[in-house]
Length: 201
Image (cartoon, rainbow, N blue to C red; front, side, top):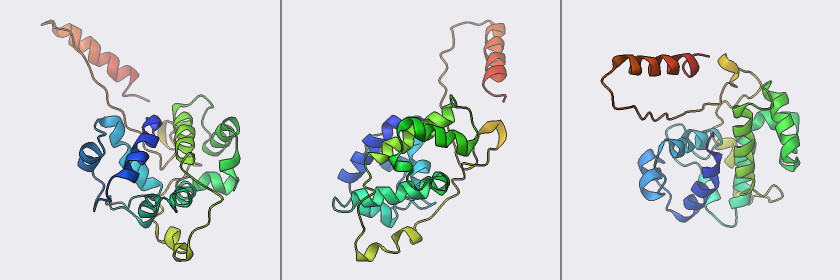
């Protein structure tokens, strides 16, 4: 998630709010008070880590995350679901220092160290980690919770077009403040620049 600084704030609100039938943009904006494009990226992110089903319904992991006695365990499982590719290379990813975590992400994705995608993956992982307890054990009825959790494709190894790992989806909102002018050439120059620098890989 590109705006990973919002993750802890949204997760804290999830613990306080009631469990919705479906976690929608309206629920995020109205009940959790997180409106705007950057916050909306949390919904597909929550689906990738197994807190929501593909249709936006909260999973059992979501429910257990809201339970203070199982919250840390549930988040640890969600991290393992969402970052499966990293755990396949190192089963103790959560014990790595931020620098070593970044190195593992670079190794797994094949991206450059300074890539914004690498930064987003690391930042999102660390934001989730603050809510996780990897030493906790689930209750007797938790044995099949992870097995029931939808495991979307979070393949970090294979990179697709423009070097973005398959399964990783980033969205950006661009706001333009256009000058007050009737000169069409000014607008043509602006949009030509956008096409050259933003819309082409």
